[in-house]
Length: 231
Image (tube, rainbow, N blue to C red; front, side):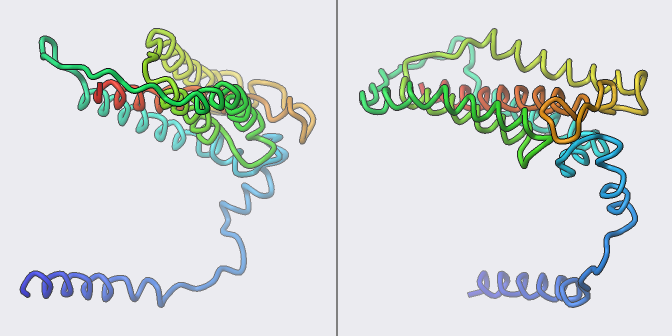
C-alpha cells in the first residue's frame, strides 16, 4: 500500500511540474531567426535539395560528429561487456541450421538490402534519408545473414578497417573544410554542382557515405558481439 502511494505521489509531482510547460505552449506563427537563415540561405550556400541534410551535415556538423562518437562508445561498451575472458572454459553448443527457405531468401534479399542502404545515404542530400538510416539498413542485411547462416563468422579485420577508415576520412573532410572553405565540415571543398542532381551539394554525399559505412560497421560490431556471447 505504501509503495503504491509513493508511486502515485511521484506521478502527481511530475504532472504538477510539467503542467505549466504544457499550458504555456503557444503555437509559432513564424520561424525563429536561425531557422529563417537555414531556409533562406541553405539551398544557395550548400546546394542541397534536402534542407534537413544541410543542417545536420554542415551547419550542425559537430552535433553529428558527436552522435557518431556516442555510437562508437556504445559499440565499445557492448564489446567490453560481452567479451570472453581468456582461459574461461565454455561449452559451445552447436548452432542449429536455419531452414533452406530462409537461406535462399537471404541470398536473394541481402544484395538488394545492401543496394537500398547505399542508395539511402548516397541520395541523402536529395531525398529523406542519410548516413544513419543507410547504415542501419546495411546492418539489417548482416543481421539477416547471421540468422540464416549462424555458423558463419564476420571478418573482423575488414570490419575494423571499414569502421576506422570511414571515421578517419570523416574527420579529414571536416578539417579540409577549415582550410579550403569556411569552416569545419564545410561541404564547399568540392564543387556544388547543379542543384537537385546526384553529383551536387559538394562534399555532403561523401560525408553521408562515410557516416553510413561507419554506423553500419559499428552496428554490425554490436550484433557480432551479441552473437559470440551466446556461443
